[in-house]
Image 1 (spheres, rainbow, N blue to C red):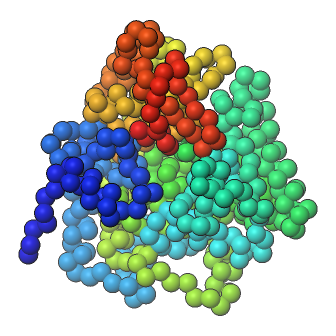
Image 2 (image 1 turned 135 degrees about the vertical axis):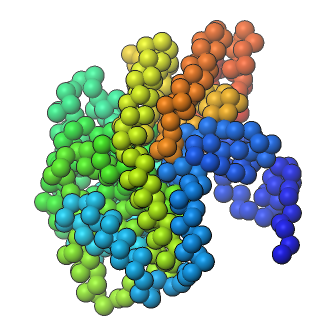
Image 3 (image 1 turned 60 degrees about the horizontal axis):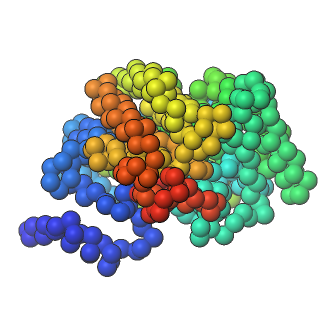
Length: 483
């Protein structure tokens, strides 16, 4: 067997520019990383430099976990074939998976990605309800296929997007710090009702226009919107409004499922034991980086889909190797007590981030649950003006200190933490220490005229055409929070 040629980093970049579509973007595009191996919470570049991974919610139980790798190799050596043959892996895993959900959610469809899962969820909802109109949340992102671009303001409202379809209704995301209604003016209970009433108004609009609602489609905690945790009671009220309008409720758990929140296996459960979606979609963490995902729904919805007479099959969805890997991921979550670990490390990080907030005025808000956390950077705590350029600068300096983090939200000013959930207390201390160093260095640099390295570095242009500079200096551009 001929060994593949080893390329230098510059050769890799040149070949990528020649052969890969230009819209396929990289992290840290001005100086992209070439990662050759990884383990646990660490990634290593072509020179063997170790980076602490705070960005990869894909490798949920840690990069290259030995148990997951062994399960893949073992099954690959025996059989991998079309999922239209009977195989025990599929049914046994479905039994294990559905046991973690409320009883009503009892039927599985296996697919290959979060985008496929969300696309299928739309088909299920439309078949079951007979309606087309979908209510989504502002800043939401649900996937890269056409049907999901249509319900993702994160895409259709940004450069290259085609704008909002007439059957799509966008509700303000229940962001109690920076949203339409905030904790400056309302209690938590009032915020839940105000944001839920925004959804009710859209239900009424869709009913008047089209006869009813197809679905309310939302992440259980919003990622691209800036690590948003909804106020208690929000989903309870929203689900009631949507169902009264004839719609179903879809919980997108692609980012936040499989125990990332620590206290529960599924993030929607954080809103209460009685909160039960009609459809749940799973993705990234399910296979620890291997392409496997699923849709979980009710017997009634599944049977209505089957009653159309159109056969549904997915050649690779639920194949023996993919399911062996997914099953191994479940083993690791359970055997290594990773939900308890996510709770412990998440609480510790929130505590330490809040200590940084007490020290650094640029931190306006710290939020999250388990290992799904956000730090909202502001220019002024009173006005909450987003510190967009500063957030990009922080991520650039952290990368130089071998910490990989990203920023997101409508103003790209929220530092996003979504590491593998094996991330340790030692790792947390390294992240906090180096973040503290960067913020301290920024404070010590009085302004760009003093010759600080901050000067002249960044303009961040977000999807609404706004940009930000540090002290008005000439800049370079970053998109979607990754320079």
